[in-house]
Length: 343
Ligand SMILES: [Zn+2]
Image (cartoon, rainbow, N blue to C red; front, side, top):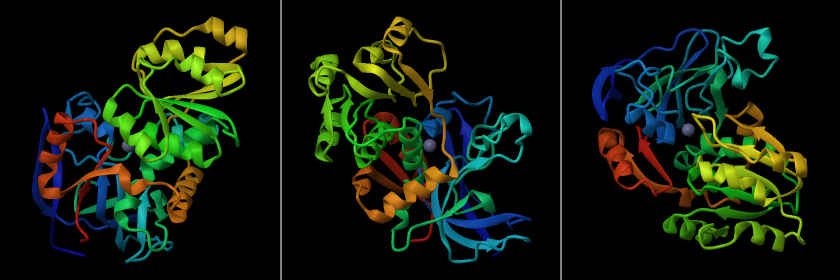
């Protein structure tokens, strides 16, 4: 496993370069992965915009939604061997302490691989062995690259304790909102997706999700109509829009739940009277746990979700700068993947 490889680097100020570099050797507990595909996340776009420069050590390889093939293992790694097809759960919890109460996925010293340490937009990538999950037999690695965002959706739906027949509203039809809608539907919920963008509304309807524009449709009334007057059982707030946060409590039935998936960097106004009056519950959901990855991989293996349709564009690693620029120019697409190698 010697020689050189190509890697991309975020250099700050919307610059992504691609350079030849030495192919690394895995150390103890590490695996060398030949990255097949790595998806561009909203977080990667934030990094590209310079919004996270205080956290990213430039020049740095970013990317955390990867599938690939094991190329080699370091000392002490017995559970993986060259040729294994895998996906990466990019959480490094090695700084976990007792104060984290066993919640390693959100431990205080959590390092997010691909942000706090080098990521997957490169031909070969060194990752800790404990971050890997086996890709489903026969699944192509392009679809497998959606495991990370799908695991986010599985976590959100699990945290929301969605049950068969419940009425669920997903606010925000970006890639994560779309996946949350799919997973909630697969869990037996009746889903309404709320989105203002016409092309995203059309995309949702095309894959069998009921989608409405809340500027045109009275969403609280629609929720009551579909629930015998009660309101929705659960709302997933995925939009990050202040108006959505303020309005979400209008949609819910008594004892309804809200799962906050979107990142709100600043405090926003909520209708706390609704929480009191209807005994509502507010639940945060940040990343995922191993069980969410296993569920995401099971859903992929079962081939019941229209995941292939989520892939809007694929660019080779050499053209990563073009891929980011295209996303900037047209942010309405679902998932752009970077093909890093392994044709
Ligand atoms: Zn992501």
